Amino acid sequence: MKPLDRIKRIYALRGVGASAKSVLHCLAYHADTRDKCFPSVPLIARETALSTRTVRRVLIGLSKAGLLAVLPRDHRSNLYILALPPVTVSVPPATVSPITVQ
Image (cartoon, rainbow, N blue to C red; front, side):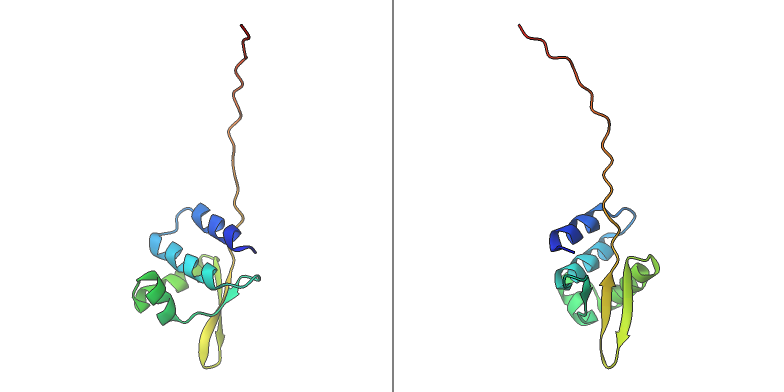
C-alpha cells in the first residue's frame, strides 16, 4: 500500500484514540510496501512521545481490534503488519438548483 493511502485510512478510523492513531502513524511511517515493519517499542515511544508502557498497551489494543497483526521474532523486535480497513466515502446526494440565464 502507498504511504498516503495508509495515512488516509488512519485518519478515517472512528473510535480510535489519539495514542493509538499516533502509534499507527509511526508504524505506517516505517512500513514497507506490504504494510510490514519492525520498529522497537522504545523507538515507537520516542517517535510518538508516549511511554513504553503506553505503547505496549496500545499495540495490544490495536491487535485485539484487528488493526494490527503482531508476530514475535527471535531476540529481536516484533514484526507488525498493518491491517487498516479501506476508506469508505459516503457522499450525500447532490442538490441541483436550476440555472437561470438572464
